[in-house]
Image (cartoon, rainbow, N blue to C red; front, side, top):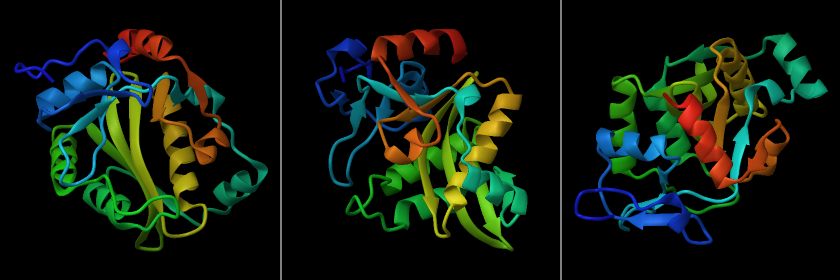
Length: 211
């Protein structure tokens, strides 16, 4: 980052997608970042690192894949779905839940505070899955125009996060959202229809839809 908190051109990112180091987590800078397809990702105690990977993993909402087993779960109505009813709980669960593929969390206290502030301002949103009155799955991210930038999800019951994700994508389809940013490849999201596109194509789509 330069002294004016301006990001370098995204094609200057290294092979891991790292574009810049430094800056802050102010709402203004986060919005500037997301509008360019840049997101923060760093460990507590480290400086803020900003990424814009190539290729980019995305889901086009109309290409959502709902498996036969998930269609059965959706029809059973075992889980209850809500939007923006428990944002702080969702981000807290995403922060603290144990994951097999990583140690610790990248959701630092400063990151948590920044996204709660973004939620209060109407930019960050959550989707929740409930079992009775217990929150058992969910996800959160940033919405700009007709683009949703997914940040993290969690599940404490089998298929709860998939349930919340599918229901939320279906809602985003109704709201004419054209693109869901999944950032980097995961087999879990690939099974739901996510695909890789070039960073240049992702940037082009943001210019059209993230307004």
